[in-house]
Amino acid sequence: MIRKQLATVLAATVLAGGFVGLSAGAAHASPRVNKCGSAYDFKQSWDITDNSSAAPVVGFIDIYYNSGNGYNCAIARGRDAAVTGQHEIYVAIRRSGTDGWIDDGAGSNYTQYAGPVYVYAKGSCIDFVGGLKYNEFTGQGASGYSSKHCG
Image: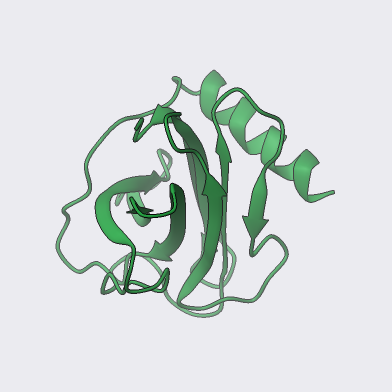
């Protein structure tokens, strides 16, 4: 079921304009906290968008990397200014070119973040997706990224 939901999100993202590659940096973001572990270095935040909203950036997917073991880590979090009330946050990651999504949060009641989720991808790129329902489940946003953080 979760894999089907992720496939649906990815398909909708591609149909809505493809994978987006914007760097996050908006004000009023939930604080970025490294839940991956002290050996993981922060690489970049990627936007979770809701193109039908007046505030299109509703959250972020934070990517971390551990150069010692070759694992990538992803966490999804909401943007405080856009996310209020009870909400569902989810995140998934995989090594590019594989079918094996590692996910957390689908069908959840997470209120701060989803993840961490990890994938080994030394010498490879990663794909990741994040999304959330917000404002008492009346709005939602989702974004997917393909072939990012290659190394």
